[in-house]
Amino acid sequence: ETLPFRASIRDFDLDPPLTYKGLKDAFHTGTVLKEKGIHINYCYSSPALRCVQTAAKVLEGLQLQNKLKMRIEPGIFECTGWYTAGENNDTLTMPRFMTKKELLENKYVIDKNYHEQMSMVDLSHLENELEFYQRCHAVTANILKMHEQEYINNIQQGQTSPQQNVHILFV
Image (cartoon, rainbow, N blue to C red; front, top):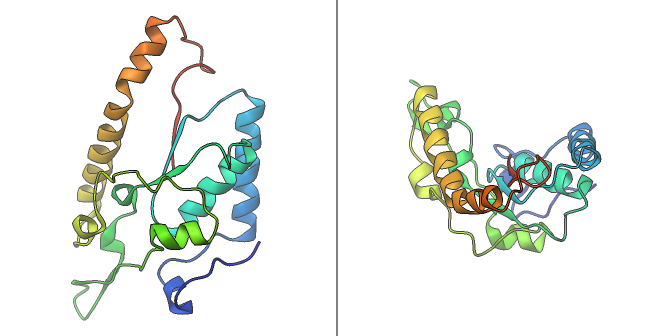
């Protein structure tokens, strides 16, 4: 594995890549899911590079790397309160995430037409951990609501086994 190309090496400071062990573990997770017959229908990833890499490797382990596009969702990024600086820890220093264009140039298979539930601008404010959990709950609830009809259709068609349900991977 090689590091993805970024505009500046400093872009890795607050947005580091996954370790080699992390890459191997993510791939293994995907292979186990495949062995268990769990098929992922949708994959949503935080814009954090380590999450994008985890999602990519899980999909590779599932042998879906060229069949299923990741949807980059800023709303499931970790607590922004962990990115503070300044004398009173009151200044937010957000990572510079890779853009969709940069992800595509680095051969990550992403859905460039996916419309995020929360924009990077909306995410760029200081929050505490309770606000983080509330944000993630709201975003994942919206995403699940988007797929609700598909799940209902599967039930109506008698497709109720775990292998036939709609499975959504959040990374």
